[in-house]
Length: 422
Ligand SMILES: *Cc1c(COP(=O)(O)O)cnc(C)c1O
Image (cartoon, rainbow, N blue to C red; front, side, top):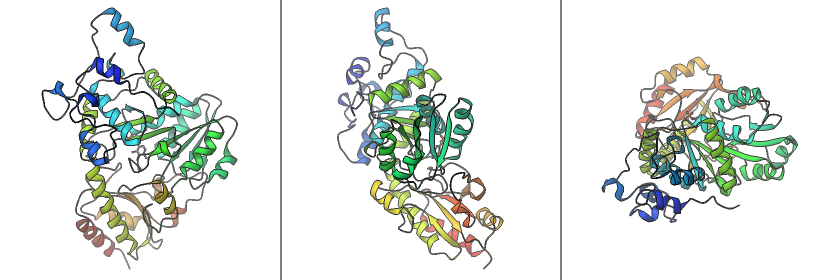
């Protein structure tokens, strides 16, 4: 598989002192430096910003050309990072695109308005009427809604599969018209790990694409070394990092896949606000240190939960007690701070809800990846059609651990659990 060209030449001509790493004193993209270094130095323009550290927000719809001839030339290069119109992206978009492509180890990334839009785009790009899609039973709820709504209306059938399926299991579900295998590891709310390389092998043997939601993995899972064709992320989560921005990314690693994704995005009219891209770039500067702190705090809180008699089990792939811990260990270099807790079935959902209501440091709400801790009761939000709902052994709560001191979080949780009936 070839890598899609980054079009350095175009960058040099059109933005000579802007995005191209070789023109920046700091933009050490792709130099093999460590993750934290790359997050600090990547995607930063040079002299055009008068020496200021951060790039400005470039807002704009119309792009002016020096001549009619120039306009004609650029129109033919719409798949490159050239600025032809606002929807084709500007310097702020391209800086973020390049950094996301680098984080995921792909050649090109596209930024769209939300994480959900990033899930929808490749499904619309690769599937057409009469074709078949496979989705894990543990898929993010709104992704299931895409399959049940949009895809169904457009004549595309979806089969849900057990996320713990091996290659042979997937083989049995493949049909001659299966064009897409969708994956998400770990699964939303229930955290099952998927054997991505095994699934990729089967998908490719049948000429299907493997599309993965890599929001949990961020940079800890490198999709293109594991056989993934298209990787999507909700940048809303840890990349944004401050619960104040919604964005999604679609990353690929071949020129062919880029042409399909960028072409579909152009047809649909996808766009992301440059202001939001700027916030995401700002989030990236501290991503490495936030992730490291939140991974450690998340594990500390998860281990504490494991020690509590009120807890039946903790659904955290980085804990040795997780049923597919070996897959996490094989394929991931780390974890984020999102996990689930199954409480003992002697407690009712109402009792657990009351304990969550009593927490002082945990907000009750959706989303994750910000600096603040969250608790979300999930028992009634888990849809399963292909597998047993194992999680319903007891009431479940999803926890996101933020940047607070874990000792304070544990004290808060301890008070809540101590208040449960014995
Ligand atoms: C949050 C989330 C999304 C969607 O992101 P939004 O920006 O909220 O639309 C997609 N996939 C997963 C796994 C998520 O957690």
